[in-house]
Length: 154
Ligand SMILES: CC(C)(COP(=O)(O)OP(=O)(O)OC[C@H]1O[C@@H](n2cnc3c(N)ncnc32)[C@H](O)[C@@H]1OP(=O)(O)O)[C@@H](O)C(=O)NCCC(=O)NCCS
Image (cartoon, rainbow, N blue to C red):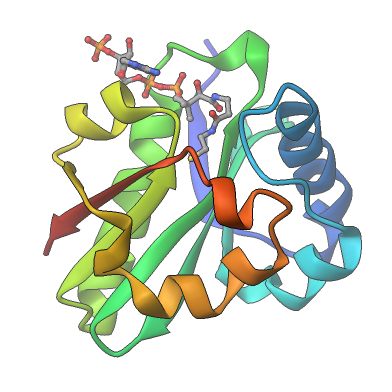
């Protein structure tokens, strides 16, 4: 039976991360990201691979400041959804955020039900000005953001 392992991303995962994130971006579920952007964020990314070394999920833990980090670019390949992989990956990033000393982790998402199941609570986007200063400025939806802001105290 296939087992799933979370590990830090390497340069060999850039194409897989590009396809995982951009396939879901085309469906309007997340922001598109260029390969350049993925490479500059590579150190933040973790991936999930199967026993056969196929990369089936990715997510990044990005520090916003000393008081919070953000889960970004979370994507599980369609055919592997509903198997606990997204939960496993987020739990791994939450553990890493704790080790790094962050008191809070946030996510901006359409997947409110998923994040609630792993303990996040809904809040107001205005609580995250540092997020707004950064990636949001590159987002085509900037003024009309329809994602839900969520947080988890660590
Ligand atoms: C959202 C996503 C990451 C979830 O990953 P996953 O591996 O399918 O989720 P899991 O199997 O770990 O699900 C855990 C639980 O959350 C539930 N769940 C998953 N997505 C949900 C949603 N949108 N609303 C409510 N519940 C949800 C599952 O049913 C499961 O419940 P259970 O424990 O009672 O069985 C995945 O569906 C995905 O990649 N979606 C497309 C891209 C995307 O939207 N990314 C999020 C960007 S922030």
